[in-house]
Image (cartoon, rainbow, N blue to C red; front, side):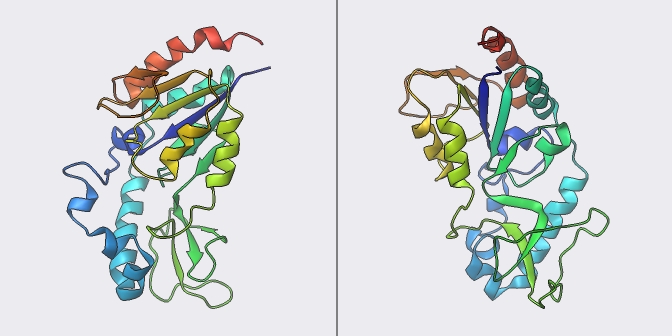
Length: 234
């Protein structure tokens, strides 16, 4: 039986693909106030600004490719039962070939009605923009299928279930500052191997983490070597 490998990914996972990060010094938050483009209140105040912001993100994504890190994680499915939990709203894990992906913060290539955040519709790559006046079958305005600040994170419970059952836990490209995602570390059973890939120092209370101080692509390459002993049948 393959070991259960659960991987939590953040913005650093997709940075090498050219996806703009939010929290770095030159990130998106330097150009836009969080309150304006990533809250329900911001959307209510200026829906055009919010739609334009995510239309631009969507168009950037369509011109982006998975990097070697994404592809390396997909390749791990040959030897492990891989479950990816991502804070990213891009679809690069899926495009790289990963089969099981939980999106904590929503999905950029989907839309939902403003009154029903649990119903999502795919956005066509051929027509990637959302407009004021785009409505669902019930006549309700559509919005980006993104979990904004102040909104609940509906996929956190399935994510916790995955982490509790994991044999190995990996963190890639996240500062572990954003909750509830950062709290997933609390659900890893004692004694289970934990690896953390990030070129920057990530502060954590756990003393049982194997740190790989590299970017996503090089870090995943090293991770695959470190995981070889765990790929043997149980």
